[in-house]
Length: 84
Image (cartoon, rainbow, N blue to C red; front, side, top):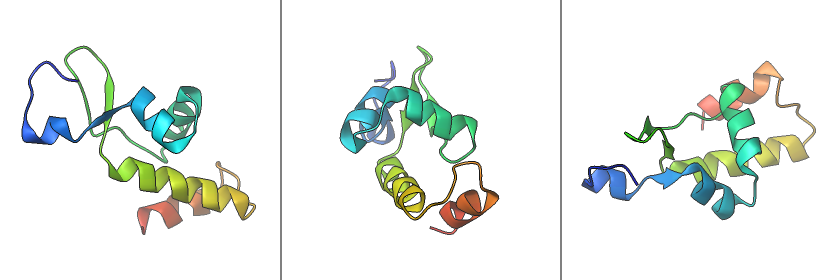
């Protein structure tokens, strides 16, 4: 949790919490970030990546697209996710 607690920061998830909620590894979430498929909302003063709750939905869509045969590096994946 960031050092300053506000209404917005209360609804943010650390990368580990997001990983647990989605069944993904922290490394997978970092990969999604590296590929531009997922972005943290903010970084805490301590440097933690903090994600909004809609990150769970976005990761679920990433998985659905992978299940349909799309590669994470396929530009279509990012465009489809941006339309969600």
